[in-house]
Amino acid sequence: MPLPIDTRKKPTDVKVYVSSGEGVAITWSDGHTSRYTFPYLRDNCPCATCNDERAKKGSDSSGVKSSDLLPMYKPRVTAKAAKAVGNYAIGIEFSDAHATGIYSFDCLREICPCDACAREFRPRR
Ligand SMILES: [Zn+2]
Ligand SMILES: [Zn+2]
Image (cartoon, rainbow, N blue to C red; front, side, top):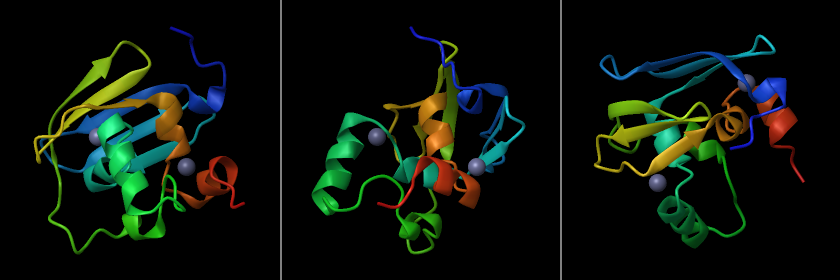
């Protein structure tokens, strides 16, 4: 397993608030902190099934859409459990029984919901 060499994608602190339903907070080697809600992570689930679903919904939009940031029209997804996967990812079991999402730290930094990371990792083409 290749270790991440980009310090921006290397976590120094990972907190998953399963019982409070708050979400996930990660502090990175460069001092940046990312916060993710569970619905946001569910919408950006990197597993093959969800990738297919997103591809079907709209082939022109990949990754994070602005509508994902305010999922008020959907029932709120929470997490039932979360576990570390090796030292490179976390696996989350969601309340809708979806449990195949493995979020690598690489991927998590790229889907950080803040503006700075959006500019850095998800530049508009
Ligand atoms: Zn998935
Ligand atoms: Zn960020």
